[in-house]
Image 1: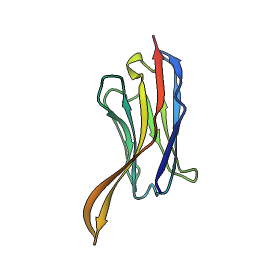
Image 2 (image 1 turned 90 degrees about the vertical axis):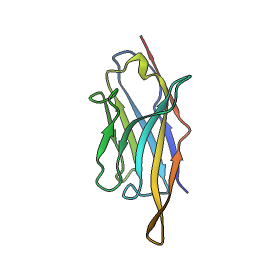
Image 3 (image 1 turned 180 degrees about the vertical axis):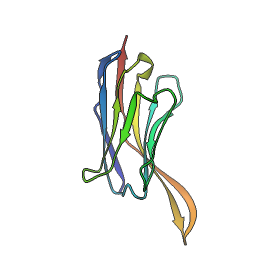
Length: 125
């Protein structure tokens, strides 16, 4: 069973830093991409950062590029999101996501997505 549990959200002043953690179990980082999404009140959930399955290539939303760093996998099976130079507009509930493509008889069948419960990040000005 795939499980993701986020932690590390907090209230922080603008310009500060936080590190979010996502404890994962039930899958391999070789087979699943792991990403961080966020959702602010009244806004749609948006992708923030992602680490690909296998090679572990990383991707970032333009709004966080240069400030956030995603990492994950390893023996601890934990994904992290290091957030520096935080801005009030970074305030949101942050969710960890694991994504894969399920194959059937060797052919792509359907995507599978798993989500954590979210952790609140609030950046005060």
